[in-house]
Length: 235
Length: 303
Image 1 (cartoon, chains in turn cyan, blue):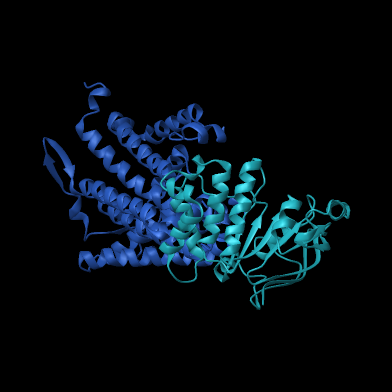
Image 2: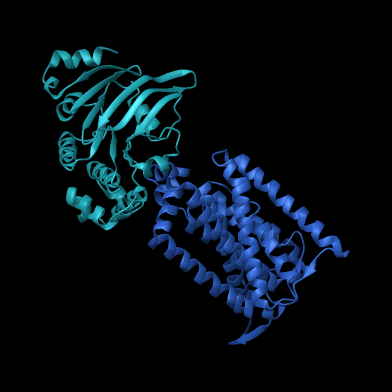
């Protein structure tokens, strides 16, 4: 069953199209990767899905329901959670307050239980729950941003370059966390620059260049260097 | 003949603290709305003015009913202001929004004048609550009941507000909206609800200030609270408008400074009070351009 459906999406900055006729599906429980060089339109696509920027045309449906054009808070409440580029955590707030903010989009159910689950997934957050979030390391802040998105109990989780600016060992932690999140049955659309790791992790990976989808890769392609290079140079 | 310093006695300090408390309440009201809308509401003083007129026009009512009417009218007017003005202008440049609130301020003032002048005179006297202005003597210092009341009310109101912001979900959402509204909305924080809540809170504070100021000065005219608003706005900027507690401290500080300068100035020189206060403001901004209470990283960022 399709959870998130992007259909013919076009986003323009002024007259310049940043995303052209983009269509992609994410099935329930699936991880779909979206990779491509800088400026390919990956973040723009996520921003349009979450209502941060208006789309020029096209459709976005969550579990069949159109969400394009709704304000960001309504899209969040419908069940779309974004881990934004640069994390955007509230540095002056405590770790726990940041997580509680994630509950704002929760439609129903046990907020306390959701926090406990996030703490189980990222034990370091439990340890530092009373500290100000700005005092965390970059990797810990990324865990906080992911935890904050998860406590909303999203139907689909969007991640915008979660490994950006992190040390290699910390990148391992972040990808490890994504595996554990997948095991919980969360539907994921992952935007990344680290192509090989993304292709290896995702059920399917779409390659985006110059605002258009160029090809689809499966996990078996991760070690096919020629194909990976072709994917990146296709723009 | 007494020197200026000798005039800085307990009496002056008490009056200055009382004035600082009222200005702090106004500063919080302005700062709350600024936090979520990045809007300096110049019409805040006119909310107080409308509240004062409400008390004056209901002078025949029981005092409690009159005060309740003041709260209802001021909060309702705040909500209308939000719906008719702030909401359509949300996201516009700060300059556009500031000028729009100027327009509302003068429109309300003109409307008040039209209503007031119907009896042939400008100004109404709020007779019913004037008795709260009586003084009692505490340890040799004359303290007006309203001074005690305003300090207590300010302390309680600020304490409750601090608790609300620190402990409740809506308070957390308001702080998040003030820090980074875009991200807060992305997380599902409802913009309209947070803004409406801040507007209602600021209206409650304006009504409280209206009651206190009307007791202190029962002669209500269209320019009621105008001078106070300008001074408080300056205080809020001097304190640091981007944070609620620095804005509040700024309001208190300028009220306290005004009270002290007023006490120190010889009676026949009181015409120099505003000049002295604003000269002090210029000095403070020259020394601490980021705001009197901005420290460390934030101070450095703004310079």
